[in-house]
Length: 220
Image 1: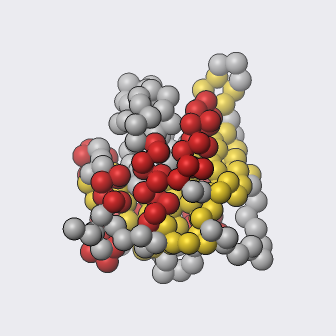
Image 2: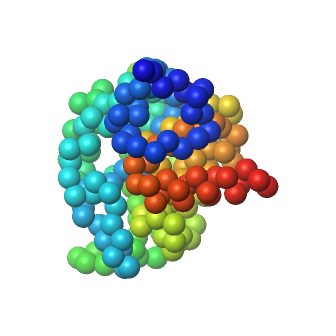
Image 3: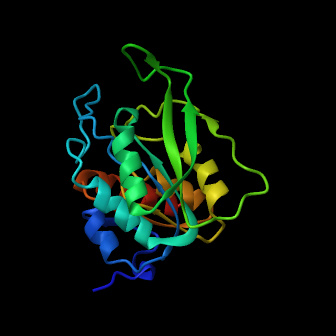
């Protein structure tokens, strides 16, 4: 049975994003902004991990479905783990995406330090079809305003960082999809930018966090 976008518009669905997207109609979302597992077996300072961060089985099918549900001549922005860049690039290209740009998010602090101090996050701009060139392109270096403290999710992204991406690659009233929505930062940013959203999350705890977070915002 097809899962019509109008049925889940401005909601967060619990489940495997591959299965959920497979029920959605093709070419039904205007923009995808997502922060998938980096495949690094990440543990934060309190020992929290990210579901499916220990395997690659989901990578190709998830972005294959993401490509299918995205409208033609539209964009996907995906964060990724730099140490597994080859796996992400292969999966994106196999899905049909064209690499359209690279984004660096500059921090004023180091999230960790090994051979280098890690003071940035990164994402790729992926295109489906041939989107029109913007009159005023977004800069490819964006300042990361402040640490979130990862209170709601082990790899929580600041809403302020996501809003410029939504503004640049979608329009008011568009439908924004996040297949790995975690604590809901993308969805909150979409709402603040007057877009509709669909969030997909397979971890029940994070699904509950994101649902509550959006519900509290809707009350104000």
